[in-house]
Image (cartoon, rainbow, N blue to C red; front, side):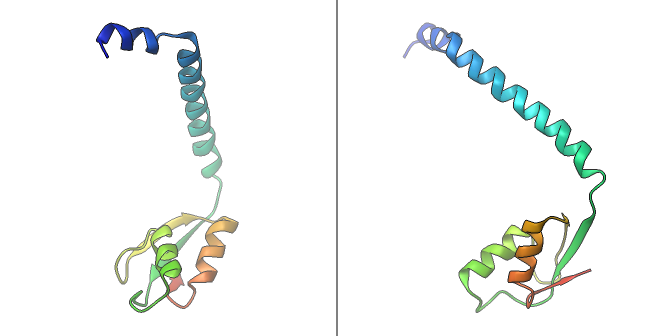
Length: 96
């Protein structure tokens, strides 16, 4: 494909509309996300037991909480999803 063809495809009205709406949404979501998270409470979670010998789904949950090594800590927003993840691996983590 030549550069001229690529330029024509990129400048088509459909592509530019999709790109603009995608950029606009991300900017709006980012601003709303920052404003909304300022008032939210947070939880600090610490990995206190090794994930060796645990189920694969539990290991993935620990990684999803942002914990890598033993005694690592992660500060997360206090949401129902995060609380559910903590409940699933409660025998591995401690909430500070």
